[in-house]
Image 1 (tube, rainbow, N blue to C red):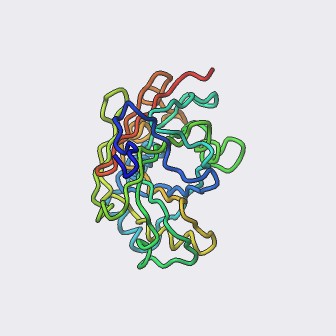
Image 2: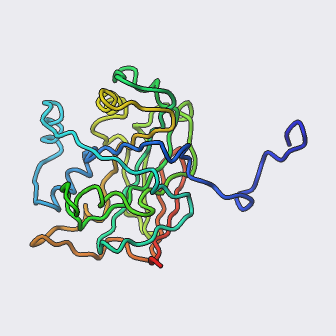
Image 3: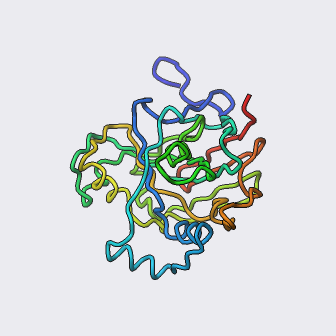
Length: 262
């Protein structure tokens, strides 16, 4: 107990965890196609791309690999152990376990070599995605594919960076109904958080509580389902009633249930 007799230690069943998002005004930057294994497998399924790991690394080193990303709206963040309603717009809802770096101080025109100085800690974000809405900027484009009610489960906590000396060595996994789907490692990341902070903060200031998600490893439903004649088999994609467990070494487990929209 504390100095005034207050209770300081609680059992898990004595409280409810909230998503560790300081404010609904905080922004969440998402790195696109930023893991070697995920990029290779996804593009192979989507467009029968045969790029090898060695070829992709050569593209990155030569500066030929496209840099892109998107914003996840903080209003769609959900607490640990919460429900996400299945969107009306899709029959192919997917999952992506991601390590989110939480910014700890104001950053504008940050430099990559000092990027880690701006990071306060890490949490998990499950980047739930609609895969059958396309990747363009129109009404059926990428914005709506990544932003919908409950599309950003987050938690279970923020682990300060002193507890994680090297975020690029962490194992990461995701289960769907207790079936292991994603089983990867942060070592497959293409560009690190420091790189993204420099690139983004040239024009976008970052404030405490803002986040940068580094991407996901292979094992999503999209990575495992070939697109044939413009269509993908819905078998591995999420459905109402499915339960997700997203885990990252040193951070914890984030649980989410997909439910039928009322």
